[in-house]
Structure formats: C-alpha cells, structure tokens
Image (cartoon, rainbow, N blue to C red):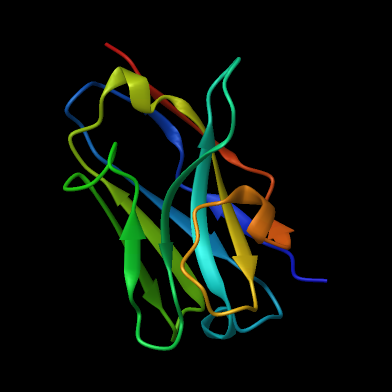
Length: 124
C-alpha cells in the first residue's frame, strides 16, 4: 500500500505563493503518475495538475495554467506543486494522488492511492 503525505498548506493572502509537497515514505514516486487535486466545501474534487514519471510530462487544469507548476525531485522522492498568484477561489483541501499506470489524467477515478490532504486558504 502506497502512503502519500502532503505538506505545505496554510493561510496566504491573495496574490501570494505556497509550495505543496507530496512524499511517499518507503515507495519510489518516480514509478508513478502523480497528480494534485483539490476540493472546496460543497464542490466536487477537481484535478489541478499531474506529472508522469517517464519523461516528466505535465498537464494542468485551465484554472491554474500559468500560475501553478508541478515538479518532481527524484532524489528527495517528492513531488511539488508551486502555487503563485493565488486567488480566493484556490481555497480548498489539496490532495496528492498516485497511480502506476503511465497516463496523464486529471480524473479522480484514475488514481489508486491518495493522501489525507492539506488545507490551503487564500484570504485577506
């Protein structure tokens, strides 16, 4: 069983930045597609971005394109989500997810393994 651990959430003002991290103690993340999802109260879980292990190709939802950057550090076995120019509508619980099948997907049903989530609040 792959365990994913998110960190880096918090409270930030509009226009600010945060960097989320997703670690997997005991597992090699570069064997998996890793994605970030978010869920705001009363809304469905939304795919934000994903990165594939084979060539580090990435994919972004239109709502975050140009503001968020996903990356992986294989030496640290960690995937990051750098979030810039944050808006109040980015407020949500952010989850990382992993799957061994090599496909860029932002569909939640695709992913076999999930973390517990980290809260991001964008507010003045």
